[in-house]
Amino acid sequence: MNTKRYDTVEAMVLDTLGTDGVDAMNQHSEAVKFIRGLVSFRNEKKITQRQLAKTMACSPSKVCRIEAGRDADLTLGDIETYACALGLSVHLALDDESLPAAARIKHHVFLIKDLLDSLAEIATKQNDDPGLVNKIHQFYGEVLFNFSMRFGDSYHKLPPAITVGTKPAIATALSKRATECLVVGT
Amino acid sequence: MAKNMTCGMKAWTVKLEGACQKELTKYNQRYGREVASVMSNLQYLHKHLLSGNRLGSCNFGFWGSERDRLYRIGQTGVRGAKETRLYVFPDEATSIIHVLCIGDKNTQPRDIKRAKEMIRWIETSPDD
Image 1 (tube, rainbow over the protein chains, first blue to last red):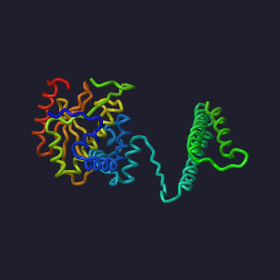
Image 2 (image 1 turned 135 degrees about the horizontal axis):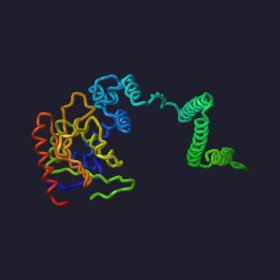
Image 3 (image 1 turned 180 degrees about the vertical axis):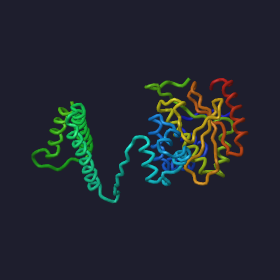
């Protein structure tokens, strides 16, 4: 009997069916990626298909059909109903990949700002709950710290700017901001 | 025995048993989309187990028990598919997913019988 053991399924498929087999397998995985994400959420919450069907007010076979389908066949309604039944909210983000990176970054920054504003609104409305307000404060500090660190990481990958005299303003601002965030985040 | 990685994760490996390699190649010639799907599902299962999840937590639509530690992996996301089943024996003692045979709905009773005989053979064979 064949006793060959493989560390990955990909290695096994490569050995058995060649690169065509691996490509076909990976293409399939891409085609069902989103559905698998939904199923992962369901499994993390330890909810069976039957239980989810009950919450969705549909038959278990409908849940089966959704999970056995392809991402391209999903309707927005299916996604919303499935996600809501798991206690998840759905946010749709449209990203125009034809735009330059700078425009897309600005778009995402504005989106983040909107979300932070809505969090601040929650804190204002829940002013009588100091625990929640403090948690939101803490979260703001973490976001600021993490964003500055990631921005700094990315910035340091840039080739050196040509400067005459003093350091570029942004480098000074980054070190200052990182220090501020370390204080806020703790 | 498989090594225990950090955080209780096991190093699950995959093993093709018997004439499964030839069967897969032959089946793939006729039903390539279905084979791609079951292999993708097998890969998903493997990664799920590699992440430290127990077999009992496998709650996927493509996954089903055929009793006596035999499981089937079905195809998903293939329109107009030939109903395909890949039979596997995931041995928690050794952390090996034994891939036993592949077939369709018509050959199911014969495939299950054959697969269970292979499990008995695997369990009585010396470790390699």
